[in-house]
Length: 208
Image 1 (cartoon, helix red, strand yellow):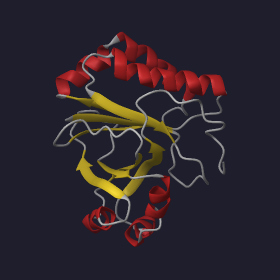
Image 2: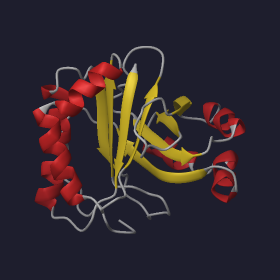
Image 3: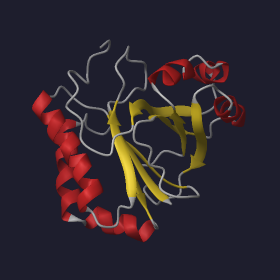
Image 4: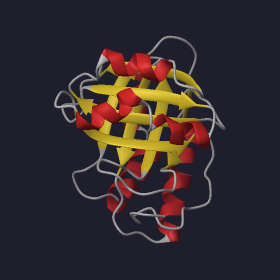
């Protein structure tokens, strides 16, 4: 699969604006014919940490050509323009990456992903793969052609919210926050949703 991941940091927005954004993300999954899978979600409630983003979008394609067709699709053009109007200018983070197997679509699970400039330590991935409640964990390099993209993505699927909270206490994960090596550009933990949920009450609140 060829996956496009985009993370959005929102400005001050209204509930209606956020709801419209999520409905737009859902329409990308249903109206853009080259999209073969994907999910999106809003950051789980909790204290905001450095690098936390508000909304994530993950879309799967058979190949890069399918992604390029999606970029030109009028629904994507419209949704992308609206998303940009709600986002803090110049902050949207993205990465295009490949993985083996069927679309990585997991409704009901929790997804934790981080984008980096520089590769995450292999030791961290081993720590995460063995952590309780982790369904899968991947660390994959950018394979697209967008010069704005980060270098690597860490993508972790977890059984539930409790497992996601526990993930943040894994020793290797905590040490990464202090490491000098890779620089995190963005991160988010969210429920995997293939349809638009109701808008969050306040995606820009530091402690929800």
